[in-house]
Image (cartoon, rainbow, N blue to C red; front, side):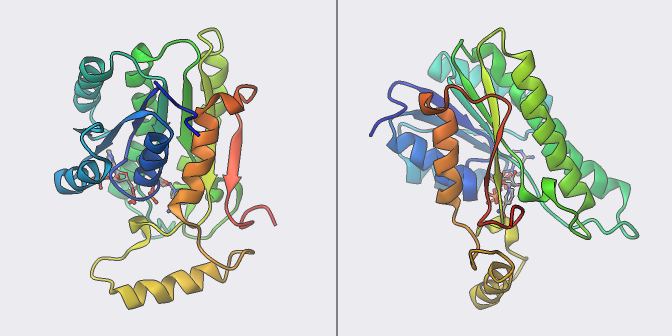
Length: 249
Ligand SMILES: NC(=O)c1ccc[n+]([C@@H]2O[C@H](COP(=O)([O-])OP(=O)(O)OC[C@H]3O[C@@H](n4cnc5c(N)ncnc54)[C@H](OP(=O)(O)O)[C@@H]3O)[C@@H](O)[C@H]2O)c1
C-alpha cells in the first residue's frame, strides 16, 4: 500500500531510533524523505541505509541558522513539504536537588524550543493539506520521580499540538502528536554499556509495562504514518498514545 505516494516528508532526528524507523516506513509508503541530526557519521549511515532518494541534512534544532539552511536545502531538493515529523529530542533525568541551569537549558532548548522553531522553519514550504506530527512521551501524563523537566518539556509539546493545530486551521494544516512509551532506541543506552547490560535494562523496564516489554521504534512509526496520511483527515490537535499501556492502565 502506498499511502504517501508523491508526498515529501521531513523527519527531524531521523538518523536513529524512532525517527529512522519512521523515515523507512514513510519511504516504503511512497514518500520522499529528508532526515536531520547533528552527528555527521550517524546521519550518513542512516542516509546510506535509506538509499540515494533520501536527503540527509546536518541541522541542530537549537540553531536558527541551521534551521534556515535546512529550509533552503529542502526547498531546493523537494520544492515543498507535505509532512513534518518533529521528532528530534534528548532525554535525561533531572532530580530537583542536583539539576543545574545548563541541564535545564539543554532539555528545554532541544525538546521545546527545537520543536517550535523546526515547525516555524518547515511551514513556509507546507501547502494546504499538509500534516505535522510532534513526538511527545508517555511521561507527559504521569508523575515520574526525577523526570520533571523531560516530562514538562513533553507536556509543552503536547500543548503545541493543540495550539498550533488551531493556529494553522486556516491553512488546513493538521497538527497531531504521537506519545511513545518506553521504546528500545539508543536514547536509553548508557555510555560504555554492553549489549548484555542493555538487555538486562530492557527486561527491567519492560517488566514495568502492562504488555511486559519495551516497544519497538516501528510501533511508533506506524502511528506516525497514520497521522501523516489522509486516513487521519478528521484528526486535529490530538495525541496517539503508543505505550503498551504504561500511562493508560
Ligand atoms: N525511546 C523512548 O523510550 C522514547 C519515549 C518517549 C518519547 N521519545 C521521543 O522520541 C524522540 C526520538 O527519540 P529516540 O528514542 O528515537 O532516540 P534516539 O535514537 O537517540 O534519536 C534521537 C534523534 O534526535 C537527534 N537529535 C538529538 N538532538 C538533536 C538536535 N539538537 N538537533 C537535531 N537532532 C537532534 C539525534 O541525532 P544526533 O544524535 O545526531 O543529534 C537522533 O537522530 C525524542 O523526542 C524522544 O524524546 C522516546
